[in-house]
Length: 329
Length: 217
Picture 1 (cartoon, rainbow over the protein chains, first blue to last red):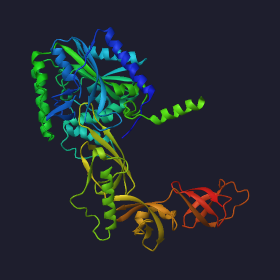
Picture 2 (cartoon, chains in turn orange, green; picture 1 turned 90 degrees about the vertical axis):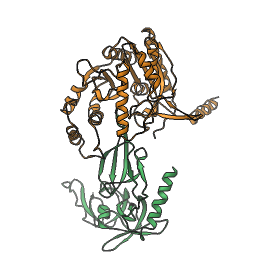
Picture 3 (cartoon, rainbow over the protein chains, first blue to last red; picture 1 turned 180 degrees about the vertical axis):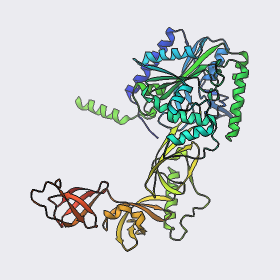
Picture 4 (cartoon, helix red, strand yellow; picture 1 turned 45 degrees about the horizontal axis):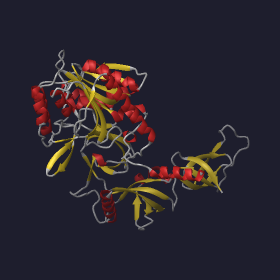
C-alpha cells in the first residue's frame, strides 16, 4: 500500500481548490448543503461496494455518494444545490482508488446533461487554465479507437478485440462476461489510455446498460444522457440528466438486483426513503459528481492518489526544523 | 503480516520434508491469495507453473466490474507475462521460495548448492542452471528458486570474480580489433577484455551483461 505523509503544499492546494469551487457556486446562486454520511440503506449497483458498520445491533452504511440524499432534498423543494463531502467504497487501495475519498456533487434545476457539461467545463476552467476541451460521443470514440461499434457488436466480437490488442495477455474465467462487461473492460483498458494526451475530454451518450439513474436519450434509446469527464485520461466526473420518475428508478433497481443474483452477491434492501422521494417526484434536473482527489492529482501533478490523501504525519521533520531553529539561536 | 509468516513457515516445512513427499502433490488445503493480496514478491501457481508477482494494478471502470492486471515472472521459464483477473478471484499459493545458497561442487549431471544456515544440500539440473554455469565457481552465493523441494532456477551474483586461464598477448598497435581481445575464464566462458589483460589475472565481471568491469589486484 502506497503511504504518504502530510505536506503543507498539498494542504494548501486543497484549500485553494475548495475556495475556488465555493466561490464559483456562490456567484451562480447554488446553495451548499450537508447531508448525513451514515445512512440506513445503500446502493443496489453490484459494482459499487459499500462499507457497513454496526451500531447497537443496527447496520448502517457509509455513503458511496451523496446522490440519494441530495435527490431527497430536491424532492423536498430545494433548488440548485452542491455538496463537498467524503464518500466511502470498499475498493482496493490503488493508484486512482482509495476507500475514502472526497467528492463534489451538484444538481441544477431545468438543466440537461448538455448544459451541465458546459457548467462542469466552466467550473474546471476556474481551477486550471488554459484548458483545451474535446467532446466525443461514446459510440464514435469507441469506434474510432477500436474499429467496432460498441452498440451493435456482439460479446464474441468484443472478446476478439480484447485478445487482439492485449497480446501476450490472458483473461481468466471471463466466460460469463456480459456485453456490458466487455464494453466497460475495453473502454477502460484501450479507449481511456488514448485520452491520456487530452487535457480535458468530455465523453457523452453512454450505453443505456451502464447508465445508473440517467435518463434515456430521446433520440436514441440505446444510450442515456450521461457524460464522463476525463482529465489526462483519468475519469474525474460523472453526470447526467436525471431520471425523475419512480417507475424508471424502480426498473433500474430491479435490473441491479437481477445482476446481483447472477453474480452470486447478497441482496440489499432498496432505499425506501429514496423511493418515497421519487414518488413525490424530482423537478427536471441534471446532476454531476467530481472526484476531488483526482482533480487535485491533476492540479498538483501527482502520480498516486495517496499523495493527496495522506494518512501519516511525519513528525521527524518537525523535530529537525525545531532543532535547527534552536541551533541558530 | 501473520498470514505471510504462516505461509513462510509452511513453505519451509514443505522444503525440509521435500525429500520424503512426492513433489507436485499439494494437498487439498492449499492456501490461495485473493487479488487484493497479490503484491510484488508473492509466489503463486499460474497454469501449474510457479510465478513471482511483479506488480498488480487495480482497474475499476467507472460503472463496472473491477479487475486486477497482474504482471508476473514465470519462475521456470523466466518469461514476464501479464494476466487480467476479476477482483476477488484468487490464485493458489506456490510452494516456492527464493533462497541464498552457496554453490559447492558439480558432477556430470548436477550442480550442488548448500543452505548456509541449515547445511542442507540440493542439486540443480542443467536446465535449472541455464547460463549461470558460465559465471559461478565454488563458494559463490547465488539466489536459488526452490519449488516443491527442487531447484528450478539459479541466478548468478550480479558481479563475479573469475581468473583468466587463456588469453593471447596483446599485439602492439593493434587497433583493428577496437582495443579488445578474447579471454577464456576459469569457468570455460570466453569474453571480450581490454588489451592490457594477461593470463592468470583475476577479473570482475557483470553477469547481467556478460561484460568485463575491471581487473582485480
